[in-house]
Length: 236
Image 1 (cartoon, rainbow, N blue to C red):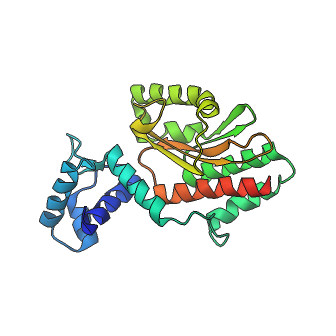
Image 2 (spheres, helix red, strand yellow):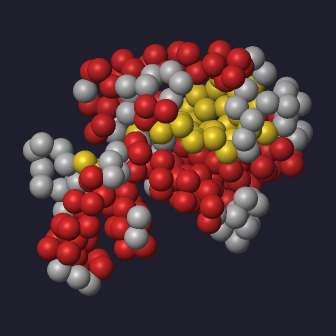
């Protein structure tokens, strides 16, 4: 993939996250300062590679799971692995909220989840002992992707089975991103699960993260989830 194709793929993903609609060549042409014909040619190549697709009702394109995976892998290569600097306003918001409960692990974890819900507008989750704490379910089902009944059923199944799956699978990366059909449960849900593993008084394999549509602001959400897990491990 050429550098321009990488930039166009990233732009389609980031624009789609904002507008929740297919992204057209005219918008991208203005962004890159080239002709719409040039953008259409590059989009055709990206479509051939399986990274974007054209919904039948629109002239624009949306990312595929494979496109999101390529983008997320590139973020993992470029994003620093250390937690967010506290100069970041979102990081400070999580820190301030959680520090109030530094002597209560359960309240600290719940507060971190509630902060992620507010900052990402996703469903927030965390394991607290043998229980799965969830917050912000209204955020999840208010997304346009989940207006159709089959998606709602798949997401509900994913939520029902998430806690036992985490307990059994024990994902061991500091940050784990499961995109759409990559989800081990609820493959047809059209949802992305982003979770961070951290050590807590309950377990060496505690998890905090978010569940939302594949249409995510991945750079922001991945940083925040990674930061929340690292901060909880340090504090608890």
